[in-house]
Image (cartoon, rainbow, N blue to C red; front, side, top):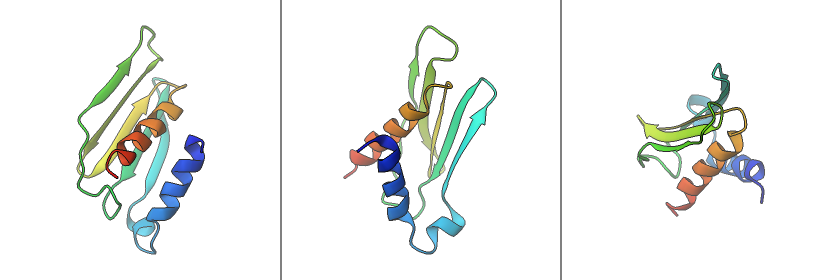
Length: 98
């Protein structure tokens, strides 16, 4: 299953009539350029879990990513070609909890 299909299924499995109204997912662009993701964990299977800052930095200013949790939110940011990397990191983190 590709990462977008997996992420869509994960999102759907969290939707319970309440979570999607008060919490959820945001994917935005940043001016580095790059991507930013925030995934609210409250009420999900990952509620209360933590992730220490995990980074990937290559030799180019746009080839980087970083993920971490803070205040029960999974955060990810990365260069313009790393949206896939951020979602993959999230999937790996989720799957390691199961």
